[in-house]
Length: 212
Length: 379
Image 1 (cartoon, rainbow over the protein chains, first blue to last red):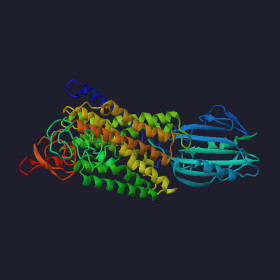
Image 2 (image 1 turned 45 degrees about the horizontal axis):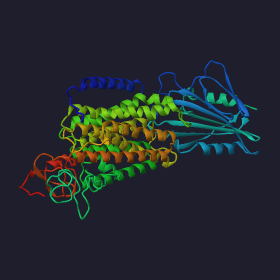
Image 3 (image 1 turned 60 degrees about the vertical axis):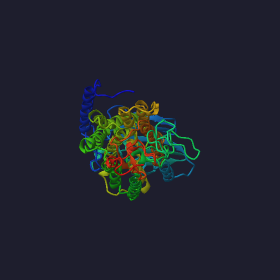
Image 4 (image 1 turned 90 degrees about the vertical axis):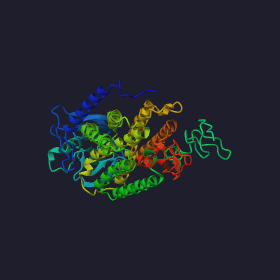
């Protein structure tokens, strides 16, 4: 049987390692304050949200029935023939955008498509306390009139900080084709400081849509 | 009579006072492993799913019953507060419920053995401080990897569900390790279990508060579906603290079992070894975290955590049972005492011959109530 006697056991080395680790952890812990509800979404000392539009060239992505353009720092995280998910990082997490074209029956309205998408996406699996924040007035995708709705919720994550999340849904239909736009962001679009919300990025992307 | 297992003389009652074997009774053969009678609470099977008799093993039946009801009632109240969407209140109450109960247990059972300050500082306080430090240190790192509303990145799952859970488990062991090296007189596996559980509870409470800070500092009552606020509270209030307590308690029990200078009656099986305990503890942290990240949702997350907690509690009971049986010995004062479990007056032996409880699992307060043999009679 192994004996754990103090004699011959490297207790000093363990103590020194523990002390160093504790100091390191404390230094990391003190490096930045955590955001409180009042300070959201501008607790960051630098490189604050929203993602600043880069000076680089415009990127264009073609999907079934439409194409759209976007700028850095947004990048394509995943895509297939009919949908693309883009993301840009912020200090409070990724701002994520999804474009998708869907087939609809003739006569389907934008509001009907929007309602269907909301029911699919707004599941309690991911969110606590989903709140309807009201319609997005003047919603349109590629200058095709549509419908939009915004929501707020808290994330349901285990082993991670809880986060407030703001979701914007837009949908527009033309004939038997519909285009859906979903944006999820930890940045409060209702912030009095308009510089910290990514709405301009959203506007740029939905206005760049060209139906094909 | 002569015990058929250890060969020593023992009163002809239900259990051998030396090795705890269930003696032959009404045609039934003797039962050395006595799986029907958990050594710390013989009313229950070893494989009986009970958090209270596993993590609070020093309590007598009355106190065990009381803690069970307090835990159930408090969890219900917290759930109702969550249903009322009083989110900050429900989260704070949830984070503190089990740690406060365990703190009371520390004093009722005198786990600290007359040294409350160093013991509490190295368990609850160390766990809480390290929980705060780790949560703050990695708060922004985690958020920077988060992708809200869409499938999480693999790097995010690796970070939150694997890397940080392992680091958290290691940090929960730091405080008990300090006691291991500085307080050698705590040499019982139940000391290790209690120290590990307390450190895990301190860590869980601190982490819950920090991770929920944005909700705690927000509106007192939130909007949205009530159940979506109440269900996560159950995980925060019961499952995560009990899981942290169980994994850390299991590892510490295995470590302290090896520290106990008393030679085991037989070879200790590998399930009680430190490497196996560490592996089980780490897996117990990773499995529900990865499961919730990949197949999440408030209900599935509860299932992941509850199933893992149940499995680990059973494993912890097996380790405690084996340890208490194989390293059994009298308390050492040579007097008599009233068994806090069955109420019989018994001599200073390893096991109560009436109920079979391992007397090293009773509270220190009850161990001391002794009188010399012959003064007040014995079994």
